[in-house]
Amino acid sequence: MASNQPSVFIDGEAGTTGLGIRQRLEMVPQIVLRSLPAPQRKDSFARQDMMGMCDLVVLCLPDDAAREAVALAEALGSDMPKLLDASTAHRVDAQWTYGFPEMASAQPGKIATSRKVSNPGCYPTGAIALLSPLVKAGLVPPDYPITINAISGYSGGGRSMIEAHDRAGGPAFALYALGLEHKHVPEIQRFGGLSRRPIFIPSVGHFRQGMLVSIALYLDDLPGRPIGADLRGTLRAFYEGSEYIKVAAGEETDKLEPEALNGTNQLDLYVCTNQRHRQAVLVAQLDNLGKGASGAAVQNLRLMLGLVGRV
Image 1 (spheres, helix red, strand yellow):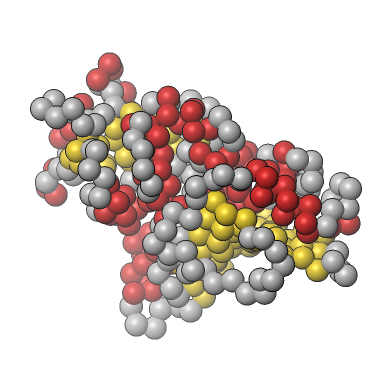
Image 2 (cartoon, one colour):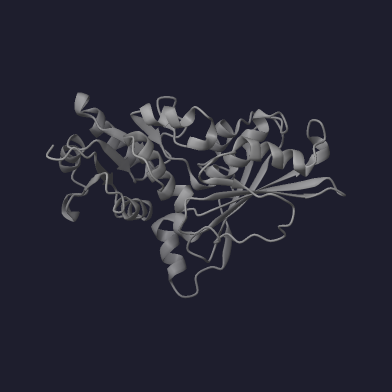
């Protein structure tokens, strides 16, 4: 290669996540960003040739297409680039590293040395960030009956949902996946440390991006009957020093907006409690296109390529 800088190809750059990743990578001077002409973007031979010229390929494709892209890359043998998959296809695959750097102290190192990394889903990012530290600490049992309610901007719903909301008179709000088979549930259960399958109820609002993920708890049903400060302190200790995850300090929050962190790679966590009724609500606030998608991908890409700097 003419340049010593690592080169990156986004397979599926025309989609919402791909465009977001490209916009962020255009501001990263340490890499060479490669692209195919529009007529060749679905040409398997052209895509494979491009993969062979790059150090890392980001897959921003539907699940089946992502699996096909992985097969193209693997057929290159020793010339196979590192792969970062933004689809759902490989998130619970043992041969892939889960790309949530803050999930454990060893996770950034695993991501940095892995040749195959799966980018987390937007909803799971919030749910896992809340649950995993509390389950590890023994404050929430793995078999606790968890129900997760979440709302996202419509940009995370794919082309048909985006078109429906961009039209005048798009729906103001909708629950969906009420068959309780949402594709994000397996990764929430696995990486949240849950032995019991959670109930996940997603919804979409008539705003483009932003997200809130909430989990209600009965404090008297938890081991040791904790108070809000115990939950909050555990989360704060777990994420101490984190660049992108912040735990709110106290109980003063009474209202949260899903769009507050738009355009950032931040993830804010809240523990809201009513001690008199012994109830708590855990809330994660993030941009579904930032820490929930494109921002997280660039964070992982930097680790995989050994680059420094903020997303």
